Length: 251
Image 1 (cartoon, rainbow, N blue to C red):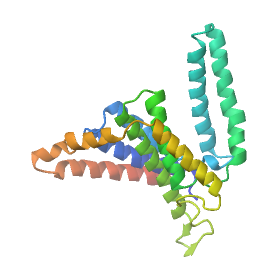
Image 2: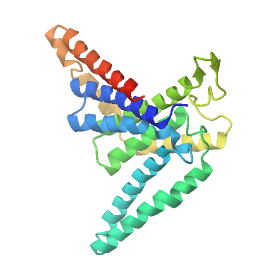
Image 3: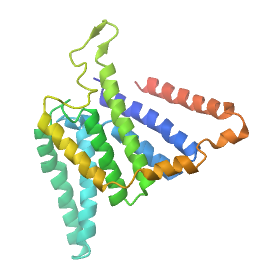
Image 4: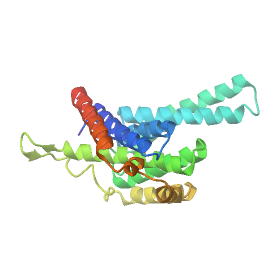
């Protein structure tokens, strides 16, 4: 399988290019494009949270811990003094970062149900719900965040499958087929739980119809009015080539 560095670099380069394209085409503002880039990069490591000792698991639960701390402190500061509110926030962070993280690691199986397209859909909808309801982003921006999370997570699965093929030795490793899959059919109970969570997140998520209105009302390719696509495509190709050069150099 690909390592943490490769997953992060590929997700960062691809989502950075797509976020730049969204900015260039008027689909996103600069802050939104940067947020999409970060979401795609984070999505590139999410499928590995089912590995007990992975960097992805630690990063994700640090983020969840920080969100829990912020929520707890914000709620407590309306009732108690600032030191008590900060103490409660710190306690919330520790509870999420350690006991909850260890409990999750105990029940998760590497390359199990969380290493699937069904799990990627859940990651997407959780990101949409958090972005809209917790961070109060617009429905359009929230679905943009979710879309980039899905792109990054799916890139992760594709990379793992590509690394399962040994081109030098002309053989296929035993891990082939365990990464890019719809779900883990050997664990129907966990798969059903994912489906129920997806349904709950869909109910909590804002309507995705805002994106349909954007595509209908906005001129997606503003440069096309000038009658030529060549200059922007040249600039875009240069950016893509520079990104791949940096990626290859980093690997």
